[in-house]
Image 1 (cartoon, rainbow, N blue to C red):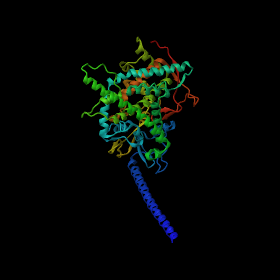
Image 2: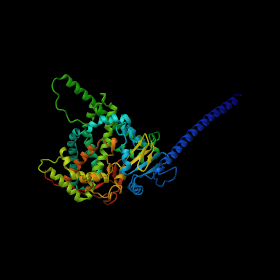
Image 3: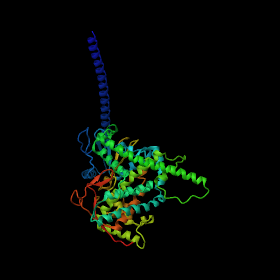
Image 4: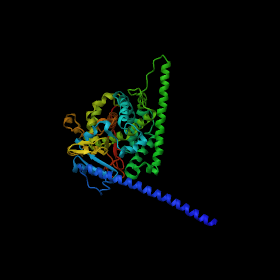
Length: 534
Protein backbone atom coordinates (compact mmCIF):
# COMPACT_ATOMS: atom_id res chain seq x y z
CA UNK A 1 0.00 0.00 0.00
CA UNK A 2 2.86 2.37 0.84
CA UNK A 3 4.51 1.69 -2.54
CA UNK A 4 1.24 2.45 -4.34
CA UNK A 5 0.90 5.78 -2.47
CA UNK A 6 4.50 6.65 -3.40
CA UNK A 7 3.92 5.90 -7.10
CA UNK A 8 0.66 7.93 -7.12
CA UNK A 9 2.41 10.86 -5.41
CA UNK A 10 5.22 10.78 -7.99
CA UNK A 11 2.74 10.66 -10.87
CA UNK A 12 0.76 13.59 -9.45
CA UNK A 13 3.92 15.64 -8.79
CA UNK A 14 5.21 15.03 -12.31
CA UNK A 15 1.79 15.83 -13.73
CA UNK A 16 1.71 19.08 -11.76
CA UNK A 17 5.20 20.00 -12.89
CA UNK A 18 4.29 19.17 -16.48
CA UNK A 19 1.21 21.39 -16.21
CA UNK A 20 3.25 24.30 -14.89
CA UNK A 21 5.85 23.88 -17.65
CA UNK A 22 3.10 23.58 -20.26
CA UNK A 23 1.39 26.76 -19.07
CA UNK A 24 4.72 28.62 -18.91
CA UNK A 25 5.61 27.47 -22.43
CA UNK A 26 2.24 28.57 -23.81
CA UNK A 27 2.66 31.95 -22.09
CA UNK A 28 6.19 32.40 -23.43
CA UNK A 29 5.16 31.45 -26.96
CA UNK A 30 2.26 33.89 -26.77
CA UNK A 31 4.51 36.74 -25.60
CA UNK A 32 7.08 36.03 -28.36
CA UNK A 33 4.31 35.75 -30.97
CA UNK A 34 2.77 39.07 -29.90
CA UNK A 35 6.19 40.78 -29.84
CA UNK A 36 7.00 39.39 -33.31
CA UNK A 37 3.62 40.43 -34.69
CA UNK A 38 4.06 43.94 -33.29
CA UNK A 39 7.60 44.12 -34.73
CA UNK A 40 6.43 43.03 -38.19
CA UNK A 41 3.43 45.39 -38.16
CA UNK A 42 5.70 48.27 -37.15
CA UNK A 43 8.14 47.30 -39.92
CA UNK A 44 5.32 47.22 -42.49
CA UNK A 45 4.04 50.62 -41.30
CA UNK A 46 7.49 52.28 -41.61
CA UNK A 47 8.09 50.61 -44.99
CA UNK A 48 4.86 52.21 -46.26
CA UNK A 49 5.42 55.62 -44.65
CA UNK A 50 8.97 55.94 -45.95
CA UNK A 51 8.07 54.90 -49.52
CA UNK A 52 8.40 58.59 -50.54
CA UNK A 53 12.18 58.12 -50.19
CA UNK A 54 14.27 56.10 -52.63
CA UNK A 55 15.30 52.73 -51.25
CA UNK A 56 18.62 51.07 -52.17
CA UNK A 57 18.45 47.36 -52.93
CA UNK A 58 17.79 45.26 -49.82
CA UNK A 59 18.67 41.71 -48.82
CA UNK A 60 14.97 40.99 -48.38
CA UNK A 61 11.81 42.71 -47.11
CA UNK A 62 12.53 41.46 -43.58
CA UNK A 63 16.33 41.89 -43.34
CA UNK A 64 16.45 45.19 -45.23
CA UNK A 65 20.00 46.57 -45.34
CA UNK A 66 21.22 44.62 -42.31
CA UNK A 67 25.02 44.28 -42.48
CA UNK A 68 25.42 46.70 -45.41
CA UNK A 69 26.52 49.69 -43.31
CA UNK A 70 30.23 49.00 -42.83
CA UNK A 71 32.78 50.98 -40.83
CA UNK A 72 35.55 50.50 -43.38
CA UNK A 73 37.10 52.23 -46.40
CA UNK A 74 34.64 50.27 -48.53
CA UNK A 75 31.79 51.49 -46.32
CA UNK A 76 32.73 55.12 -47.03
CA UNK A 77 32.95 54.33 -50.74
CA UNK A 78 29.45 52.86 -50.44
CA UNK A 79 28.28 56.22 -49.04
CA UNK A 80 29.87 57.91 -52.07
CA UNK A 81 27.84 55.58 -54.31
CA UNK A 82 24.62 56.40 -52.42
CA UNK A 83 25.28 60.14 -52.74
CA UNK A 84 26.08 59.78 -56.45
CA UNK A 85 22.90 57.76 -57.05
CA UNK A 86 20.31 59.39 -54.80
CA UNK A 87 21.69 62.97 -54.61
CA UNK A 88 19.98 64.02 -51.36
CA UNK A 89 18.44 61.18 -49.32
CA UNK A 90 17.30 57.56 -49.14
CA UNK A 91 15.64 55.25 -46.62
CA UNK A 92 17.55 52.47 -44.87
CA UNK A 93 16.25 49.53 -42.81
CA UNK A 94 18.43 47.60 -40.34
CA UNK A 95 16.31 44.45 -40.27
CA UNK A 96 12.85 45.10 -38.83
CA UNK A 97 14.47 46.84 -35.82
CA UNK A 98 15.69 50.27 -36.98
CA UNK A 99 14.14 52.45 -39.69
CA UNK A 100 16.33 55.29 -40.93
CA UNK A 101 16.32 58.12 -43.41
CA UNK A 102 19.86 58.90 -44.58
CA UNK A 103 20.40 62.52 -45.64
CA UNK A 104 23.38 64.03 -47.46
CA UNK A 105 22.33 67.32 -49.03
CA UNK A 106 22.20 70.74 -47.30
CA UNK A 107 18.58 71.40 -48.36
CA UNK A 108 17.48 68.20 -46.60
CA UNK A 109 19.87 68.43 -43.65
CA UNK A 110 19.03 72.02 -42.70
CA UNK A 111 15.34 71.58 -41.70
CA UNK A 112 16.30 68.72 -39.38
CA UNK A 113 19.33 70.25 -37.68
CA UNK A 114 17.63 73.64 -37.31
CA UNK A 115 14.45 72.14 -35.78
CA UNK A 116 13.53 73.35 -32.30
CA UNK A 117 15.31 71.50 -29.51
CA UNK A 118 11.90 70.86 -27.87
CA UNK A 119 10.95 68.41 -30.66
CA UNK A 120 14.44 66.95 -31.22
CA UNK A 121 15.35 63.64 -29.57
CA UNK A 122 18.71 61.86 -29.43
CA UNK A 123 17.76 58.37 -30.62
CA UNK A 124 18.81 55.03 -29.14
CA UNK A 125 20.73 53.64 -32.13
CA UNK A 126 23.98 55.41 -31.20
CA UNK A 127 23.46 57.37 -27.98
CA UNK A 128 21.90 54.57 -25.87
CA UNK A 129 25.27 52.79 -25.72
CA UNK A 130 26.90 55.92 -24.31
CA UNK A 131 24.43 56.43 -21.46
CA UNK A 132 26.11 54.15 -18.89
CA UNK A 133 29.29 56.20 -19.33
CA UNK A 134 27.97 59.73 -19.86
CA UNK A 135 24.72 59.59 -17.88
CA UNK A 136 21.92 62.00 -18.75
CA UNK A 137 24.38 64.67 -19.91
CA UNK A 138 23.93 67.52 -22.37
CA UNK A 139 24.98 65.18 -25.20
CA UNK A 140 22.20 62.66 -24.54
CA UNK A 141 19.39 64.39 -22.62
CA UNK A 142 16.30 65.88 -24.27
CA UNK A 143 13.61 68.50 -23.75
CA UNK A 144 13.72 70.85 -20.79
CA UNK A 145 16.43 68.79 -19.05
CA UNK A 146 18.73 69.38 -22.05
CA UNK A 147 17.73 73.06 -22.30
CA UNK A 148 18.61 73.75 -18.64
CA UNK A 149 21.95 71.94 -18.90
CA UNK A 150 22.89 73.74 -22.10
CA UNK A 151 22.24 77.09 -20.41
CA UNK A 152 24.32 76.10 -17.39
CA UNK A 153 27.23 74.82 -19.49
CA UNK A 154 27.45 77.74 -21.94
CA UNK A 155 29.59 79.92 -19.59
CA UNK A 156 32.23 77.15 -19.53
CA UNK A 157 32.92 77.82 -23.22
CA UNK A 158 32.93 81.62 -23.10
CA UNK A 159 35.86 83.36 -24.81
CA UNK A 160 37.22 84.59 -21.48
CA UNK A 161 37.46 80.98 -20.27
CA UNK A 162 38.93 79.69 -23.54
CA UNK A 163 41.68 82.32 -23.39
CA UNK A 164 43.09 80.74 -20.25
CA UNK A 165 43.30 77.33 -21.95
CA UNK A 166 45.73 78.52 -24.66
CA UNK A 167 48.69 78.14 -22.29
CA UNK A 168 47.63 74.52 -21.65
CA UNK A 169 47.46 73.79 -25.40
CA UNK A 170 50.97 75.24 -25.84
CA UNK A 171 52.36 73.20 -22.94
CA UNK A 172 50.81 69.87 -24.03
CA UNK A 173 51.92 70.40 -27.64
CA UNK A 174 55.48 71.14 -26.47
CA UNK A 175 55.55 67.91 -24.45
CA UNK A 176 54.52 65.96 -27.56
CA UNK A 177 57.05 67.77 -29.77
CA UNK A 178 59.87 67.18 -27.28
CA UNK A 179 59.03 63.48 -27.34
CA UNK A 180 59.09 63.51 -31.15
CA UNK A 181 62.53 65.15 -31.12
CA UNK A 182 63.84 62.40 -28.83
CA UNK A 183 62.41 59.69 -31.09
CA UNK A 184 63.87 61.32 -34.23
CA UNK A 185 67.26 61.55 -32.49
CA UNK A 186 67.01 57.77 -31.98
CA UNK A 187 66.41 57.32 -35.71
CA UNK A 188 62.62 56.85 -35.43
CA UNK A 189 61.41 59.41 -37.97
CA UNK A 190 58.37 57.43 -39.19
CA UNK A 191 55.70 57.95 -36.50
CA UNK A 192 52.05 56.99 -36.08
CA UNK A 193 50.11 60.16 -35.38
CA UNK A 194 46.98 58.96 -33.55
CA UNK A 195 48.90 57.35 -30.68
CA UNK A 196 50.80 60.56 -29.95
CA UNK A 197 48.13 63.15 -30.68
CA UNK A 198 45.39 61.33 -28.74
CA UNK A 199 47.57 61.31 -25.63
CA UNK A 200 48.35 65.00 -26.17
CA UNK A 201 44.65 65.97 -26.40
CA UNK A 202 43.87 63.82 -23.34
CA UNK A 203 46.71 65.53 -21.48
CA UNK A 204 45.37 69.00 -22.29
CA UNK A 205 41.76 68.05 -21.54
CA UNK A 206 42.66 66.64 -18.14
CA UNK A 207 44.38 69.95 -17.32
CA UNK A 208 41.48 72.05 -18.67
CA UNK A 209 38.76 69.92 -17.09
CA UNK A 210 40.29 68.94 -13.74
CA UNK A 211 43.58 70.88 -13.38
CA UNK A 212 45.06 67.38 -13.30
CA UNK A 213 48.60 66.82 -14.60
CA UNK A 214 48.44 63.15 -15.54
CA UNK A 215 51.82 63.04 -17.34
CA UNK A 216 50.00 60.59 -19.63
CA UNK A 217 52.20 61.50 -22.62
CA UNK A 218 55.23 60.09 -20.83
CA UNK A 219 53.81 57.33 -18.61
CA UNK A 220 50.73 55.09 -18.42
CA UNK A 221 47.60 56.17 -16.54
CA UNK A 222 44.82 53.89 -15.30
CA UNK A 223 42.20 56.57 -16.04
CA UNK A 224 43.47 57.25 -19.57
CA UNK A 225 43.69 53.51 -20.33
CA UNK A 226 40.10 53.08 -19.14
CA UNK A 227 38.84 55.89 -21.41
CA UNK A 228 40.55 54.31 -24.43
CA UNK A 229 39.11 50.89 -23.52
CA UNK A 230 35.56 52.27 -23.15
CA UNK A 231 35.77 53.91 -26.58
CA UNK A 232 36.93 50.65 -28.18
CA UNK A 233 34.22 48.60 -26.46
CA UNK A 234 31.46 50.98 -27.57
CA UNK A 235 32.59 50.62 -31.20
CA UNK A 236 32.68 46.84 -30.85
CA UNK A 237 29.22 46.74 -29.27
CA UNK A 238 27.67 48.93 -31.94
CA UNK A 239 29.16 47.20 -34.96
CA UNK A 240 30.04 43.57 -34.27
CA UNK A 241 26.82 41.99 -33.02
CA UNK A 242 23.30 43.46 -33.20
CA UNK A 243 22.24 41.25 -30.23
CA UNK A 244 24.60 43.30 -28.05
CA UNK A 245 22.35 46.34 -28.64
CA UNK A 246 20.07 44.94 -25.92
CA UNK A 247 21.37 45.56 -22.41
CA UNK A 248 20.08 42.35 -20.86
CA UNK A 249 22.22 40.38 -23.31
CA UNK A 250 25.27 42.67 -23.43
CA UNK A 251 25.89 42.91 -19.67
CA UNK A 252 26.17 39.10 -19.47
CA UNK A 253 28.93 38.95 -22.12
CA UNK A 254 32.68 39.17 -21.48
CA UNK A 255 32.75 42.54 -23.27
CA UNK A 256 29.95 43.83 -21.05
CA UNK A 257 31.87 42.85 -17.92
CA UNK A 258 35.03 44.56 -19.28
CA UNK A 259 32.97 47.67 -19.99
CA UNK A 260 31.67 47.82 -16.40
CA UNK A 261 35.17 47.38 -15.00
CA UNK A 262 36.60 50.24 -17.10
CA UNK A 263 33.50 52.31 -16.34
CA UNK A 264 34.10 51.96 -12.59
CA UNK A 265 37.64 53.32 -13.03
CA UNK A 266 36.48 56.38 -15.01
CA UNK A 267 33.51 57.15 -12.73
CA UNK A 268 35.60 56.74 -9.57
CA UNK A 269 38.17 59.22 -10.86
CA UNK A 270 35.56 61.83 -11.86
CA UNK A 271 33.59 61.38 -8.63
CA UNK A 272 36.71 61.89 -6.49
CA UNK A 273 37.70 65.05 -8.38
CA UNK A 274 34.21 66.61 -8.09
CA UNK A 275 33.87 65.73 -4.39
CA UNK A 276 37.33 67.09 -3.50
CA UNK A 277 36.73 70.28 -5.47
CA UNK A 278 33.34 70.73 -3.79
CA UNK A 279 34.95 70.43 -0.36
CA UNK A 280 37.71 72.86 -1.31
CA UNK A 281 35.21 75.41 -2.65
CA UNK A 282 33.17 75.28 0.59
CA UNK A 283 36.35 75.75 2.65
CA UNK A 284 37.35 78.76 0.54
CA UNK A 285 33.90 80.31 1.02
CA UNK A 286 34.11 79.84 4.79
CA UNK A 287 37.61 81.35 4.91
CA UNK A 288 36.57 84.38 2.85
CA UNK A 289 33.47 84.88 5.02
CA UNK A 290 35.45 84.74 8.27
CA UNK A 291 38.34 86.89 7.02
CA UNK A 292 38.16 90.61 6.42
CA UNK A 293 41.23 90.45 4.20
CA UNK A 294 40.53 90.59 0.46
CA UNK A 295 40.86 87.18 -1.18
CA UNK A 296 44.14 86.52 -3.01
CA UNK A 297 44.27 86.13 -6.76
CA UNK A 298 42.61 82.89 -7.75
CA UNK A 299 44.06 80.20 -9.98
CA UNK A 300 42.72 79.67 -13.48
CA UNK A 301 39.22 78.20 -13.31
CA UNK A 302 38.90 74.79 -14.90
CA UNK A 303 35.78 73.08 -16.25
CA UNK A 304 34.80 71.55 -12.89
CA UNK A 305 35.22 74.91 -11.10
CA UNK A 306 32.78 76.54 -13.51
CA UNK A 307 30.27 73.69 -13.15
CA UNK A 308 30.40 74.09 -9.36
CA UNK A 309 29.80 77.83 -9.51
CA UNK A 310 27.13 78.02 -12.23
CA UNK A 311 23.46 78.51 -11.22
CA UNK A 312 20.18 78.62 -13.13
CA UNK A 313 17.51 81.34 -12.90
CA UNK A 314 16.14 79.71 -9.73
CA UNK A 315 19.55 79.74 -8.06
CA UNK A 316 19.96 75.97 -8.46
CA UNK A 317 23.24 74.48 -9.65
CA UNK A 318 24.10 71.05 -10.99
CA UNK A 319 24.07 68.11 -8.59
CA UNK A 320 27.30 66.16 -8.07
CA UNK A 321 25.92 63.39 -10.27
CA UNK A 322 25.11 65.88 -13.06
CA UNK A 323 28.57 67.46 -12.79
CA UNK A 324 30.23 64.06 -13.08
CA UNK A 325 28.14 63.31 -16.20
CA UNK A 326 29.13 66.60 -17.85
CA UNK A 327 32.81 66.18 -16.95
CA UNK A 328 32.79 62.65 -18.41
CA UNK A 329 31.11 63.98 -21.56
CA UNK A 330 33.70 66.77 -21.89
CA UNK A 331 36.48 64.17 -21.78
CA UNK A 332 34.73 61.73 -24.13
CA UNK A 333 33.62 64.27 -26.75
CA UNK A 334 36.75 66.39 -26.60
CA UNK A 335 39.81 64.20 -26.86
CA UNK A 336 39.21 61.78 -29.75
CA UNK A 337 37.42 64.22 -32.05
CA UNK A 338 40.08 66.92 -31.72
CA UNK A 339 42.87 64.35 -32.06
CA UNK A 340 41.30 63.04 -35.28
CA UNK A 341 40.99 66.57 -36.68
CA UNK A 342 44.64 67.38 -35.85
CA UNK A 343 45.96 64.11 -37.34
CA UNK A 344 44.08 64.45 -40.63
CA UNK A 345 45.06 68.12 -40.95
CA UNK A 346 48.74 67.20 -40.55
CA UNK A 347 48.26 64.33 -43.02
CA UNK A 348 46.68 66.59 -45.66
CA UNK A 349 49.43 69.17 -45.25
CA UNK A 350 52.07 66.42 -45.51
CA UNK A 351 50.55 65.41 -48.84
CA UNK A 352 50.45 69.00 -50.13
CA UNK A 353 53.88 70.51 -49.55
CA UNK A 354 53.03 73.92 -51.06
CA UNK A 355 50.11 74.41 -48.65
CA UNK A 356 52.26 73.23 -45.75
CA UNK A 357 54.99 75.72 -46.63
CA UNK A 358 52.49 78.56 -46.96
CA UNK A 359 51.06 77.77 -43.49
CA UNK A 360 54.54 77.53 -42.01
CA UNK A 361 55.51 80.91 -43.44
CA UNK A 362 52.34 82.41 -42.01
CA UNK A 363 53.23 81.11 -38.54
CA UNK A 364 56.86 82.22 -38.82
CA UNK A 365 55.77 85.72 -39.85
CA UNK A 366 53.47 85.79 -36.83
CA UNK A 367 56.22 84.71 -34.43
CA UNK A 368 58.93 87.00 -35.85
CA UNK A 369 60.68 89.05 -33.19
CA UNK A 370 59.35 87.06 -30.24
CA UNK A 371 61.50 85.54 -27.51
CA UNK A 372 59.60 82.27 -27.27
CA UNK A 373 57.60 79.86 -29.41
CA UNK A 374 54.11 80.09 -27.94
CA UNK A 375 50.84 80.88 -29.68
CA UNK A 376 48.71 83.47 -27.87
CA UNK A 377 44.95 83.98 -27.91
CA UNK A 378 45.23 87.08 -30.08
CA UNK A 379 47.25 85.09 -32.65
CA UNK A 380 44.36 82.76 -33.53
CA UNK A 381 42.63 85.37 -35.67
CA UNK A 382 45.92 86.10 -37.46
CA UNK A 383 46.28 82.64 -39.01
CA UNK A 384 43.80 82.94 -41.91
CA UNK A 385 45.43 80.49 -44.34
CA UNK A 386 46.18 77.91 -41.64
CA UNK A 387 42.52 78.15 -40.58
CA UNK A 388 41.44 77.61 -44.22
CA UNK A 389 43.59 74.45 -44.35
CA UNK A 390 42.09 73.19 -41.08
CA UNK A 391 38.53 73.78 -42.32
CA UNK A 392 39.21 72.02 -45.62
CA UNK A 393 40.60 69.06 -43.67
CA UNK A 394 37.46 69.06 -41.49
CA UNK A 395 35.41 68.89 -44.69
CA UNK A 396 37.46 66.18 -46.41
CA UNK A 397 38.16 64.12 -43.26
CA UNK A 398 35.47 65.11 -40.78
CA UNK A 399 36.17 63.44 -37.40
CA UNK A 400 32.48 62.56 -36.90
CA UNK A 401 30.93 60.95 -39.97
CA UNK A 402 27.26 61.30 -39.04
CA UNK A 403 24.85 62.41 -36.34
CA UNK A 404 21.45 60.90 -35.68
CA UNK A 405 18.22 62.51 -34.53
CA UNK A 406 14.58 61.61 -34.21
CA UNK A 407 11.62 63.97 -33.78
CA UNK A 408 8.42 64.02 -31.78
CA UNK A 409 6.44 65.23 -34.80
CA UNK A 410 6.45 64.62 -38.55
CA UNK A 411 9.17 66.58 -40.37
CA UNK A 412 8.50 67.97 -43.84
CA UNK A 413 11.43 67.98 -46.28
CA UNK A 414 11.81 69.29 -49.85
CA UNK A 415 10.05 67.42 -52.64
CA UNK A 416 6.94 66.93 -50.52
CA UNK A 417 8.66 64.20 -48.51
CA UNK A 418 7.72 63.60 -44.87
CA UNK A 419 9.75 61.89 -42.17
CA UNK A 420 7.29 60.29 -39.70
CA UNK A 421 7.69 61.09 -36.01
CA UNK A 422 10.03 58.62 -34.32
CA UNK A 423 12.03 57.79 -37.46
CA UNK A 424 15.80 57.87 -37.01
CA UNK A 425 17.31 60.57 -39.22
CA UNK A 426 20.95 59.85 -40.01
CA UNK A 427 22.49 63.14 -41.10
CA UNK A 428 25.56 62.10 -43.08
CA UNK A 429 28.26 64.70 -42.48
CA UNK A 430 30.58 62.68 -44.71
CA UNK A 431 27.96 62.43 -47.48
CA UNK A 432 27.16 66.14 -47.33
CA UNK A 433 30.85 67.09 -47.38
CA UNK A 434 31.50 64.81 -50.40
CA UNK A 435 28.34 65.55 -52.38
CA UNK A 436 29.36 66.49 -55.97
CA UNK A 437 26.17 68.54 -56.39
CA UNK A 438 27.35 70.71 -53.48
CA UNK A 439 31.17 70.72 -53.79
CA UNK A 440 33.26 70.83 -56.97
CA UNK A 441 35.75 67.94 -57.02
CA UNK A 442 34.71 66.95 -53.47
CA UNK A 443 37.50 64.37 -52.98
CA UNK A 444 40.29 66.88 -53.63
CA UNK A 445 42.00 68.90 -50.88
CA UNK A 446 41.53 72.57 -51.76
CA UNK A 447 41.78 75.12 -48.90
CA UNK A 448 40.73 77.93 -51.26
CA UNK A 449 37.13 76.75 -50.80
CA UNK A 450 37.27 78.50 -47.42
CA UNK A 451 38.79 81.75 -48.59
CA UNK A 452 36.56 84.45 -47.00
CA UNK A 453 35.88 85.83 -50.49
CA UNK A 454 34.17 82.54 -51.40
CA UNK A 455 31.92 82.46 -48.34
CA UNK A 456 28.89 83.96 -50.13
CA UNK A 457 28.90 81.19 -52.72
CA UNK A 458 28.95 78.44 -50.05
CA UNK A 459 25.57 76.82 -49.51
CA UNK A 460 24.13 77.02 -46.01
CA UNK A 461 24.72 73.72 -44.16
CA UNK A 462 27.16 72.46 -46.79
CA UNK A 463 29.88 72.49 -44.10
CA UNK A 464 28.77 70.93 -40.80
CA UNK A 465 31.75 69.28 -39.03
CA UNK A 466 30.32 70.34 -35.64
CA UNK A 467 26.68 69.68 -36.65
CA UNK A 468 24.44 72.76 -36.58
CA UNK A 469 21.37 74.32 -35.01
CA UNK A 470 20.36 74.37 -31.34
CA UNK A 471 22.00 70.99 -30.67
CA UNK A 472 25.32 71.72 -32.33
CA UNK A 473 28.66 70.94 -30.66
CA UNK A 474 28.96 73.19 -27.60
CA UNK A 475 32.75 72.77 -27.59
CA UNK A 476 33.51 73.73 -31.20
CA UNK A 477 35.33 76.98 -30.29
CA UNK A 478 37.45 75.02 -27.79
CA UNK A 479 38.28 72.48 -30.51
CA UNK A 480 39.13 75.09 -33.15
CA UNK A 481 41.38 76.95 -30.71
CA UNK A 482 43.33 73.78 -29.85
CA UNK A 483 43.51 72.80 -33.52
CA UNK A 484 45.07 76.11 -34.56
CA UNK A 485 47.58 76.12 -31.69
CA UNK A 486 48.77 72.54 -32.22
CA UNK A 487 48.88 72.67 -36.03
CA UNK A 488 50.72 76.02 -36.03
CA UNK A 489 53.33 74.88 -33.50
CA UNK A 490 53.83 71.54 -35.27
CA UNK A 491 54.53 73.24 -38.60
CA UNK A 492 56.88 75.68 -36.88
CA UNK A 493 58.95 72.83 -35.43
CA UNK A 494 58.68 70.01 -38.03
CA UNK A 495 58.50 69.41 -41.76
CA UNK A 496 55.99 66.67 -42.55
CA UNK A 497 55.93 64.16 -45.40
CA UNK A 498 53.78 61.02 -45.87
CA UNK A 499 55.11 58.09 -43.85
CA UNK A 500 55.02 54.34 -44.46
CA UNK A 501 52.40 52.15 -42.82
CA UNK A 502 54.32 49.01 -41.66
CA UNK A 503 51.18 46.85 -42.01
CA UNK A 504 50.63 47.85 -45.65
CA UNK A 505 54.29 48.44 -46.52
CA UNK A 506 53.35 51.68 -48.30
CA UNK A 507 52.15 55.24 -47.69
CA UNK A 508 48.64 54.29 -48.84
CA UNK A 509 45.95 55.22 -46.30
CA UNK A 510 42.69 53.34 -45.76
CA UNK A 511 40.16 55.35 -43.77
CA UNK A 512 38.54 53.74 -40.73
CA UNK A 513 35.29 55.38 -39.55
CA UNK A 514 34.73 54.44 -35.89
CA UNK A 515 33.53 56.79 -33.13
CA UNK A 516 35.83 59.20 -34.97
CA UNK A 517 37.59 58.89 -38.32
CA UNK A 518 40.86 57.00 -37.95
CA UNK A 519 43.08 55.03 -40.37
CA UNK A 520 43.62 51.27 -40.66
CA UNK A 521 46.95 50.45 -39.06
CA UNK A 522 47.34 54.08 -38.02
CA UNK A 523 48.21 57.34 -39.79
CA UNK A 524 51.96 57.47 -40.40
CA UNK A 525 54.01 60.60 -41.11
CA UNK A 526 57.72 61.23 -41.64
CA UNK A 527 59.07 63.98 -39.38
CA UNK A 528 62.02 66.30 -39.94
CA UNK A 529 62.80 68.71 -37.07
CA UNK A 530 63.31 72.32 -38.13
CA UNK A 531 65.82 74.67 -36.51
CA UNK A 532 63.44 77.60 -36.41
CA UNK A 533 64.81 80.67 -34.61
CA UNK A 534 63.44 81.39 -31.14
